[in-house]
Length: 574
Image (spheres, rainbow, N blue to C red):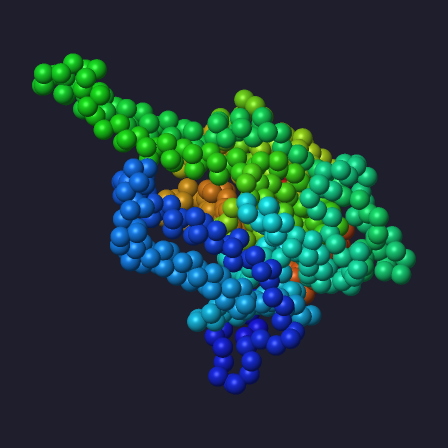
């Protein structure tokens, strides 16, 4: 068996049993929860396709002819009933075999899932590379009190393994145990192992939780068993009215209005042509047009609005001992845990139509999530809520005025507070967004702001940057500017600084290369770090980067530059 984060292996011809007593079955209702749509779709499609036949059959039954025909020639009816029963038996046997051949096992190093009847599949996810463990409940699973677990690992763009379905209480307990192991802590047992979830998230005191450990035997670290009685802290809860308003004022509404307007012009043009060159009036011409042309638009609007409402319905963010837990969902509910130590980058977005309301959206890049719908940290929030969320998930900026610089990144323009901008000589490249497009560095993070109409602020911890590259085309060389691309794991965030002064871009490139070179050599980077552990890790990275810079260039000027980035010094001097 390969030791990759997620493996798919057929059964090896070793003569060994595919399962033994150490493997555990999933819940017997799992195939039904997974395949209930198929059960419903088959009869619906059959009856819908033969609707006229069934209508005629009903009329024959009401007239009494059906009973008479059944008595005279029962063979066709017996064949139909036998086919129906055979289909039911095939579905039942298929579900039973699917349940029997789906089993899982948790070891000290891996979460392993085996499935498949004819084509067997073996998937495993390494616990020490675990990025997230999400608990999901589709509609039927909510009625049956079942849940599935999704395991995400580093260096993967899709789900490494899915365990579906378990009793919800068992799934919560298993998730807590796996996250304990991923964090390097001793797994909890008994009553301690059940992670608080569901209604308990909303009943906790929003202001009475401290994640720091004061255990004298553990030296202040949280790599020990979590303390009992530690309460969760609710950070944000999105009101339904604000969510509906944000959906109606979103990009989807603009797109649908544009498409609807174009279709209306087309229909109006066709109707006008009928009225001008035919014998009908304009009203009659409209009636002759195939109005089901608008059905795809209606279906698209429903899908768009439902997806956004479902992903933000009853959205609650709660800080727990495992990280930030997000709970949301309309028909299908999801409990998602985002540990601060796994966040690679964070981006605050403000679409144009949200600006009058002061609303923002937060998305994150988490290694292992890739481009999924689970990268939203906050679907819609006020400025204060956005700052609270960023403070919980993002490391300390280590400057005297973090709130001011955060607000400057969201709304500011120009270079007055330390952010760079596109030089006037390169105005031809960015005539509209020139004064907004730039970056600012602090001892712990790189802040990139962009967008004039739709604003954005991207923040990347220095130690999360995998690499960086400078790009300069012929026109950029003529203007003495360059574009810098920051490489982070795959996700919704692209960290790129366009058309910056060449010297400033080179200095930023050297600084981020130094941080990245140090962070890649530190094994602690793979741990499921808590906020206090993450702060300690960042201090080690900065110390090692400063020592590395001092060893390369032992001058006093270089030592100051390693400890305090140039952009931060500029702000201090101002």
